[in-house]
Image (cartoon, rainbow, N blue to C red; front, side, top):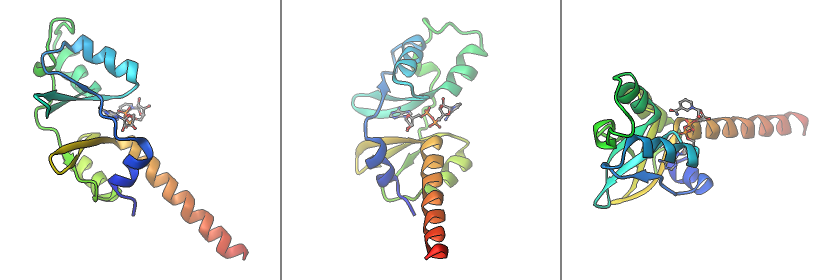
Length: 142
Ligand SMILES: NC(=O)c1ccc[n+]([C@@H]2O[C@H](COP(=O)([O-])OP(=O)(O)OC[C@H]3O[C@@H](n4cnc5c(N)ncnc54)[C@H](O)[C@@H]3O)[C@@H](O)[C@H]2O)c1
């Protein structure tokens, strides 16, 4: 079964981050520029939260708040959920489903080693299934 570390080797370990005192407008701009649906909120080198499109929709837009005037700190989740490099795709899917979230922060010891999304897990599952089908076809035709 594919692990978080294998996914990160494929997609890269870059973490897109923002500070808690930056504005929500800055965060939305950064997410659009980087084409990602989440930013990790980092303060003093430590991940203290996560800000996603869902947090914008529910904690800013729906509450009629102004994105240039609202800081990320007031719209983020301050309970990011973590995964370890050795955890499997199935384990991560279970964690995301249980917590109703779509992004996990990957911790390698004390260090932030990457981010994985539900899309990464689906992509990996599809690749594994394609490989299994090819192997079976090869077996049938040989
Ligand atoms: N997951 C969601 O919340 C969500 C919601 C609606 C639509 N979609 C759409 O579905 C497709 C796939 O979405 P997804 O689930 O992969 O989410 P995503 O759009 O957040 O992720 C896209 C890629 O960026 C990476 N990424 C996201 N945030 C990151 C961060 N802070 N640092 C480093 N890498 C980061 C992910 O690991 C993934 O490889 C996209 O087209 C997206 O627009 C996703």
